View (cartoon, rainbow, N blue to C red):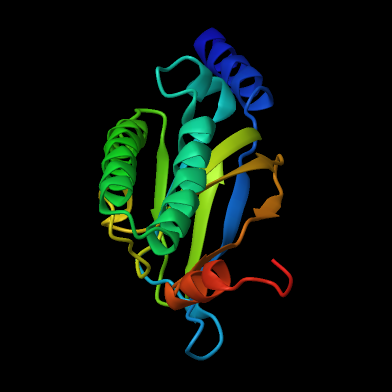
Length: 195
């Protein structure tokens, strides 16, 4: 009888300290400038990690790595279509390839962290993750939109942060865009009158 009371007391104390998980869900889509409205991005991968868990790893600079990669990708595209000097083009491509290789290795290491929670989108582009409350870094990898660089050969990437609430639902949607490079060429080659 004493054991039964002891086990009941332990169970009550344990249940009182249980934190109810929150739910993070959303829809991942992609937009094709020449096609119909947004389409579901089937097979997109979502990687989530709590900020506290990430801080104790060597991948705690993920937000700067992804941001730097995306800025340089845009600059690389502009220089590629705005330059005719083959030496400058080759140098720019070598620099971007090195940055893309670094970003790829960093992101692949990030995706292998033990504290990562993973999900994939279904045929309607929806995903759901059950997470402890707190701030999370969410890495999206597109299933449909891919780029011609080492970091995004298996799918374009984007990184977001979100606060997950206790026992509630938080929504975070993501949209990728299939870009035609011709728009970059037209915009960068256009010279305003008087210049």
